[in-house]
Structure formats: C-alpha cells, structure tokens
Length: 440
Image (cartoon, rainbow, N blue to C red):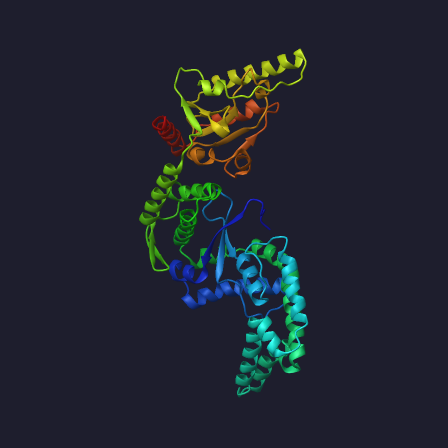
C-alpha cells in the first residue's frame, strides 16, 4: 500500500466526464465506464463480501497528489462513499470524517434495526424503502422469465435481501449489509488507496487530457477561495503543469459546457497570480543590495533574550554564530534576501543553481540565533509562494527540506548549493532576483 502520509486527496473528478472527454478511443464510452465500475465493485466485494450490491461508488473519482506531481494517482473517492452511505442511512454527517461520524452512523443503524412497518421505513429511510419497492417490482418482472435457470438465479439474489421472506427479514438483511459498510469503512478507504485506477487510465485514457482536467479542477478550487493555505497547496502544482510537466498541451476538453485547453488554463493561471499579487499587503522579503550590510531591520529584529548562561557557554555560542555568518558569506550566492514581519531575523540565500537556503541570521544581541531554529531548503521557483507560509506549514511542505543545525549541517548545505542544477532552475533563480528587485 502507498505511504498515505505523502498523498492527499486534491480534487474530485466526474467519472462520466473523464470517460467522455479523455478517452483515447480504445473502448466505447459504455465499456470504458463499465471497466472503472467493475474495478471498484471488486474493492467493495473484497472488503464487505457483498458482491451484488448495486452501488459502485464511482460517480466521482479522486486525484491524489504528493504535492510535487500533478497526477499522483487516481482512485475511487472515499468522500463519495461516505456521502452516499450517509444518504442511504439518512444520517446527518459532515462531508469529512470527524469524531461524531461513527456515532451518527451507528445511531441510524440502530434505528434501522428497529423498523417494524413499511410506513416507518418510508419515513425514516426513504432510500432503502425505494430499494424495497424496486425489488418487488423487479421480482414481478422476472416472474415472466421463460428460462427457469435464469429466473431462479435472479430470484436467489432477492432471497438474500429477504424480500421473499417477509418485511422483518428484509430489514434484518439490510441492517447486516449496512452494519458491515459502517464498521469496515476504514478497510475500504485503505483498499481504494492501495488499488488505484492508474492502469485503467493509462490503457483507456489520453493521460495528457486527464492532466488538463485535473489542473482545471485545481484552478476552480483556487478561483473560489481566499484561504492562503489552500492557494499554497495548489499553485505550485499548477505551476509545475504549466512550466515543467511533460504532458502534451494540445487538444481540448469540455467540462460542464466549458471549453478547457492549455491557452485557457494559462490565461486563468495568470489572472489568479495577478489577483494574489494585488491582495498582498505585506512584503515578507527584501533584497539586500550587493556590497551592502544587512538592513537595519534585520540588525534590530532579534528580541534580546536574557538567557542565563556561563561566560564559557556565551563564548561558545558567539563563536558558532560568527562561524555560521562566515560560512554563508563564503558561499557563491547570487543574492541575499532579508525576512521581515513573520520571517523577521531570517536570511534567504539564492544560489545560481536555483536552490534557496533560509536560515536565521546571527545577531549578537540574540545569542541563541547562533544555532537556534532550523534551516529550510527550497527551490527558487517555489520561493515566493512557500515563503508566505508560517514556519509550521513550511517545515511540513513536501517541497521543503528541513535541516537541523547538527554536526554536519554545513556539509549538507554545501552539497545542495554546489550542484550544477539544470538550465530551468538556473533561470528561475535569475527571475526571482529580478522580481525581488522590482518589488523593492
């Protein structure tokens, strides 16, 4: 099974739209749709041991990403499963699992268990009542079946639902089915994470069109939120698609009557970036001009910490601070950028290979800055977006490497900054510096 700590559900896609718009022509629409439904029907049977259940839970499928790749993997949607299960049981649950989900679902199961008459079922569980009514209508229809073997096989399924054994047995069978769905739902979630639809996508879909569809959904999410943390999750993925991904950028898809192609995606992405830029009221980083000392804002930024320590310990930390300062000054950085506001006291070093190192600058009046706080390593292309994060978000972001001031921290940093880097990364470093110069 995948390491799900690395993957997150990033967007939900309509299976029917994906099949219609992203097919590579290998299968007909109906057969392709059936292939995905059959795949998840197998998941349902493996977990719940209920092969004949008529809901495949794949109206919506989910794109999961590790924060680096536009398409991590595509699989069944646990969100859809939980939503439909709640609908069937008429339970008032949130879209996402929380501490109350289990109790609410089990309360409804207990209510179902004690249903005694059809009118009560119709009022309390309208979806299950409809199944009950449809079942009897179907039994009446197959009663006309001329082939006895075929008729008996069909009847056998409805016997398992308790339809022919009376209303109380129907309720008992339904309780047993949905009790398994509630109690084993986490097994189902693990199952769909370990058995993705990627093989089906590669075989029957134009993967570049699937990527286009996914990026379209990412843009929709960004266009409809003001939440900075959400923007910081999605924008790097969109940027990756625009600038680095190998997906073909030709062709188009039509999603809910809207034509989507590379040109429209590019235009929306630029509008989104401009909107974010206009909303920025605070500047967190300022370029340090070549040949100049750190700005006064950095020199005064550290709040003096009156630490109780011996003269020996003070001299040791002071030496470490001077050593750190000299180390960075000896490195071949293109530019230094000083942090302000929530990054007050930090210095970012931009290197020719497109790497950026963030570390707290040493300040004598704040002696703990000699070794305190971690180092953050990220790419120049991601710097402006990721450096807007608070440090908790930054250290947990998949595009950020956190380095502790341990015995070998300088060797680790040196290894990062002395790599040659590719042409794209080198160019991104230059672009970043130009943008920061314009900002100042």
